[in-house]
Length: 85
Ligand SMILES: [Zn+2]
View (cartoon, rainbow, N blue to C red):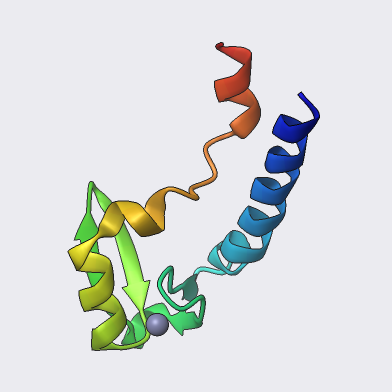
């Protein structure tokens, strides 16, 4: 149980760090390298109905090869999934 809480804290902390820039309408986070990218001149990829932004073509290509690897850290209320168990 303690280990689970520890993981939760890590996930929440990294989510705050990774996704805070998304609160701004103009900037998004490149999930591959962690850079903030300006949406207006970013490389955009649509995947599973969501848009992902990248600072360069290599990041976009890397993401495209294995999207799930970079999306696993998404912030869908970790507390929710635990409550359902
Ligand atoms: Zn990048």
